[in-house]
Length: 239
Image (cartoon, rainbow, N blue to C red; front, side):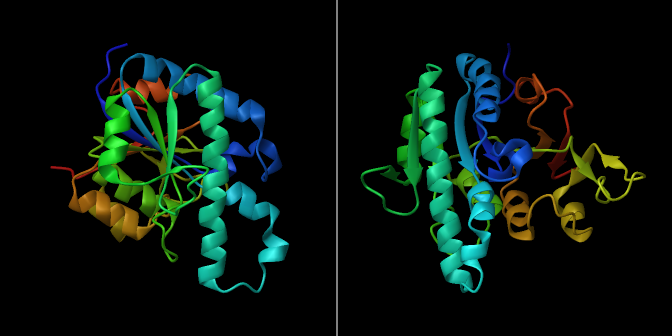
């Protein structure tokens, strides 16, 4: 394997880890994701990760009703810490060194996130899972992923999803939806494509960070992305 990208940020939604149930954590899914990461790690690629918390939020939806935005976003940030800690253990079990860094201080569970600390860990061949969102309410984990990608000087943001790329409309609702293999950041913003939020797109555009949107649970896709093959859809600055 000859990596095209040497340092990456991999963004995985919490919902993706829940499998068919839609909430909680599916151990088989986690094992499959770890098996996709391992050859990339073994090839010497430095890896940062951001994992969402939607799978846990889905399970506590009823209890969360009536919470204000700050409180519900805080619950979401804590959910990302839970997912990150569990995923770290799965990586360690597969022989992959990993650390969890959190934007919210939880001293007994994770190190406090500082960009240089994350970079130091990656330089020492450790996968860094960055949890706790941005540490502030009103920001999505997509925005957190874009921000951490820039801060840790990653070359590309890989957004792993349940679909195989970006479409001009929802392919689930519209069977005639057209897949967009390549699109610019500005065009994605203009067309209001909801694969990531506007703040995340803007951060990547301002810092010239390409985004690759690809199907997570298709064997070999992550490796192919790293090797520079056309997988999924790529968002870049264009000409």
